[in-house]
Image (cartoon, each protein chain N blue to C red):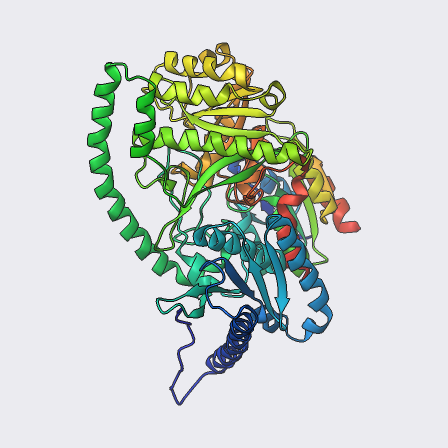
Length: 122
Length: 509
């Protein structure tokens, strides 16, 4: 089983994903924004991070950029809706910058668990 | 002369860190000595060639010293040297005017000769150039004082001197002025009490923030004294306005409330997110005070938030834009320019008429490249006043936008007034980012229901940029998007990756 870090400013979504991951047997850590997420990731060296793109203080793109530099083997799943604008260019950017997987919200918790499992096998 | 921050340390027992710091200090000092020697050599050369010492105007010759850059690159300098030189040259070429010139003197001093700018304007331009170079080379948080600036001055004995102003000294006095709501958007920045994620437009300043704060306090104090007097005058103006002042008297008003001689205008590039381009430039006033403090937006006038000064500012901004349009057209270029104008300027006849006089000089083609942004609106501004302002501006522009508070809710009426977009200056909103993101969403939801586009000024962090894009703002600007430029520029591609480019470059090093 793996160590998973979930970074999302939406507490409801974060806990939903965390519960599903714990049920799947993973050890889960949570962070409410990118700044906190990068700090925790550097302390615990997770196997996978699930990161929302749009967050206050430090967004998902910055998180990926910073962690890719220090943790090249880290598996990263970027998730987001397009917001009100239905603009996916920031989400697409995460793909170009090194996210292993890019998922458009809404995502069911079980789906995310499957994606994490796939990522871990790669 | 600047005081450089390399105090000697005398402690006998030093830690490794302290020794390392001391070594760095010695190297920095050595690099500075070399730099100064080069600048002084330049002064001697100028004296020798010109034969007279005051052949040029004091302040028109400025120097950028880059020896500290060399030091920061260390062993990589040999490989990086040509690239750095090309980068500096390309920045200079793009930022200097057609009649300005520059050359590399010695190993690490770039001499810039300004033909028309005032010393203050030249200093500001050099500061912006230094800022751009350091940001392109070192990312968002470059080492302090990495570029030194020298200014050729003539002293009281007509002696030519090279006054060394470390960039950390010169621009460090730029301070952030958050309290400019209802005025033009902010452009100046400073490191004072800002969170780490805020992108600094003047990243060279962090180490001297304290000094900047002191200067800011002194300026504010002086401004208050001025304001009281002007309030009194303003009441007189309102009284006179009731007597229907004839047009000629406007000239007197302009004399009384004329702008400071060193008032400048810069342009803030606006990102049209959906189309992936810098689509427009907003004209923003700025002024460097005698003490070196940069005032931007409404604060560019000695007294702010006081009627006649705002009107003067509006008029000058419009005149400046017209002049820049002339230049663009001469070069066969076009650019979309956003011109802020206070609702009050268009509400009072004696101010509206001179403004309209200039508007009427605009050709039909030029009107297609102008967007007006009505500002100065608060909760108590009658919708009728806004409506009148829009009807004055519509015939002379492509579109009219209106700046509101983030809490604004009267969207339906604005839609019916024919407003193209409504927006906010997020640089002036006293909220944390966590609070601001939902508020931005809510603002856009209300606007979209009324089929209004939205814009946001003052985007200072990348997370705010992505958040604003997600919230649905159509146009955004601010230091996290792109730095101000001195002239409006044609449209150019700009995507989300450009927002992160400096961070990507920083991490790649």
